[in-house]
Amino acid sequence: MTQKYDAIVLGAGAAGLFCAATAGQRGKRVLVLDHADKPGKKILISGGGRCNFTNLGIAPERYLSSNRHFAKSALRRYTARDFLDLVEAHGIAWHEKTLGQLFCDGSARQILDMLLAECARGDVTVHCGDAIAEVAGEPGAFRVGYGAQSAQAPALVIATGGPSIPKMGATGFAYDLARQFGLKVVQPRPALVPLTLPAEEALFRELSGVATDIVARIDGTFGKAEFREAALFTHRGLSGPAILQASSYWQRGDRLAADLVPDRRSGWLREAKRERPRVGLRKVLNEALPGRLADALAERLALSGDLGNLSDKALTAAEERLARWPFVPDGSEGFAKAEVTAGGIDTAALSSKTMEANKVPGLYVIGEAADVTGWLGGYNFQWAWASGHAAGSAILA
Image (cartoon, rainbow, N blue to C red; front, side, top):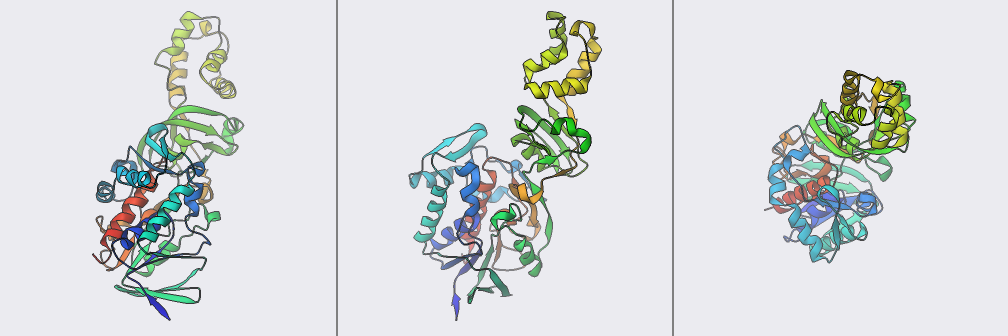
């Protein structure tokens, strides 16, 4: 027997659950389906288990999309303050970390429990543990087979995310559905992901475990940006928040520039020469940077002897290189290590107000499944809430 609903939401993650709760509390009969055995698995591991659930600095320009204006409407109509009000209404204690990032004081489980409680308020049915066997039908009359059951609804919401972190069950299922209904897909790529360095950069790969504050600058295939945060050297290349941020704008062949001494003003090495002419470059770098990194940079700069024996021209050149140290990554660690997926279902086919497909009435695309990717630090969760709210408010309006 086929059960009838007002909406079927595919995906019990952040966007799917929030969309379902929004529609359910409007009196719509909603079914949420997920092939995982439990809902919200990515929520539980987010933010080191404390869920970086939004950011006080939310702004449309901090999102990547083929249509850079697409996210504006949803983000404006459901803000970080709106979600924070909900968090506080559920008695969840929170704190602000760096750069406007908001985390639970306790566990990410609190956010998932809140979402499930909101779904329960709307009498939403959440069914996990059965793979989607079939999605069929036509606009306004969708049919979904799952396990030995089937359901039908005039509205279908694609909230299955992208292929990042496949060990959590992530797949490209959303893109298969999109193509089935005639929607285009912008090439998906790993984002917020560690970058790898080629063999000739072995000197830096040997610094695995060393972290330092940098300004990462990228003028890449997908845009121009700079981020001041920590970078981490790994046995394969570069990671840490600054690198993860830059990676969303990067494509193979693009160069990344790192200011390795962001707190040193122009002329600092020449000043050191005047004040301490008998000190070597290696010692000065060790005062500014972690020891192993300082030693590696000194080796690369190849300026031996005391500062007093080095020309101002040579020291100026060293300063400039330290402020714009070039890295040309040869790849990334892929979807396995990517926090999110950039690219996805083309937003040109969607309404920015409702997330509904323009030519497929009743079909909605939300969250990471769409070609909208935020910065690190709660931006992608806020997109999940905003896009989920937009669709949930529009279903059978």
